[in-house]
Image: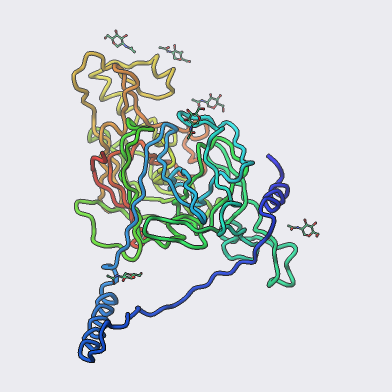
Length: 456
Ligand SMILES: *[C@@H]1O[C@H](CO)[C@@H](O)[C@H](O)[C@H]1NC(C)=O
Ligand SMILES: *[C@@H]1O[C@H](CO)[C@@H](O)[C@H](O)[C@H]1NC(C)=O
Ligand SMILES: *[C@@H]1O[C@H](CO)[C@@H](O)[C@H](O)[C@H]1NC(C)=O
Ligand SMILES: *[C@@H]1O[C@H](CO)[C@@H](O)[C@H](O)[C@H]1NC(C)=O
Ligand SMILES: *[C@@H]1O[C@H](CO)[C@@H](O)[C@H](O)[C@H]1NC(C)=O
Ligand SMILES: *[C@@H]1O[C@H](CO)[C@@H](O)[C@H](O)[C@H]1NC(C)=O
């Protein structure tokens, strides 16, 4: 990977110029269109109607909802993708929809390079890239731009300390490490276009170098740079179609709601989001933490210790919801409790398929050959507030071939094996465990909602 400074200059040279950057906010009153007639009574009537409409809006702000739907596709690389249109004229780009990170970034420029980026149905040679030169609305985010502080809270503009008005220094290049892989690039401001909505001055990352990334990432986390926060969304929701449809032309809607939360969805259970205490790693703040009270397998409480379920004062432990993780992760202490309970209950009915366990790295696996239907204990996550997430069977056991099923949850390795809680969340609810559930991130009311729903 080249040094950040090299990257910065190669990017600036690609642009050939540097923009000073301002944001303008306008406060406009409710527009009262001139009446189509000069009749004074009609004019008064029009004003009366406009006043009543405005009063209604002030009294019922939630009734003015603006909803944007974006198709969400299950992908063979283990995530769910959306297309976003950036630039003028718009360039269509593919992104992983990720509630576990906050920056939105795209592979960028003809010079983009990506190492270890061949995945199922993805070839590193033809990952779609954004071309800033082809857009008339691309601007480099300056070092003095407050948006630079979203990603660099302590950014210093080394060359601009005295005369900030003429500062042309760019915000420093970002380097982001993910669970696997990384990306690095420069922050740009662009126009983000939806069929019925345009977002100006949307900040996103123009990445030049990445590793292990099948596409760009659309961060839906809680950080100020995330798509929902930049768009001022009140809530967003999705229903992930089964991974059986990976890379097929099958999608469901990612629903972005602004201008009011709207009516509550029928039959939905809610649990409050939990703010993680200030910890060693500020990115923990950007995760969607929820309070998991207990996990039951076939009605039996596996008795996961409280210190794993809920984050401690150092910000370690706890449970997050993450659309960018494929199989849910559990710290090995909890994983063992869950796996052993399944082994105990299911082992009475089906035989273990240990060879498959060795080969696949998944555990436990059972041989169900010759069975017409497979019956398994229910896996239920019980959250604060009494909300129960009853997982569809296909979310926690999957057929590896026609005769063997394996549990699709993975565990930490080594360090979490003792009684200690490793750094970061102890439980990550991944997208496999969210298939065929309607999931709503209610940002206005700080809660997660869910219910069983066939997404396709
Ligand atoms: C909702 O708000 C938008 C602007 O945010 C406005 O143009 C529209 O007229 C409003 N709709 C209603 C029904 O008040
Ligand atoms: C990318 O390359 C692969 C193999 O070279 C090809 O099968 C696929 O159709 C290409 N995708 C696009 C979008 O061009
Ligand atoms: C600041 O200015 C000096 C001297 O012109 C230059 O060498 C350096 O690269 C600049 N640093 C940044 C971050 O622009
Ligand atoms: C699975 O792997 C372990 C250790 O690698 C080995 O001891 C065991 O015999 C293997 N089991 C089977 C059924 O292959
Ligand atoms: C499953 O069991 C059947 C018969 O009971 C056996 O023929 C088959 O080899 C087993 N499959 C695996 C993967 O263990
Ligand atoms: C666990 O970690 C050790 C060393 O870090 C590694 O050798 C081993 O393969 C890992 N095991 C699994 C199941 O990932």
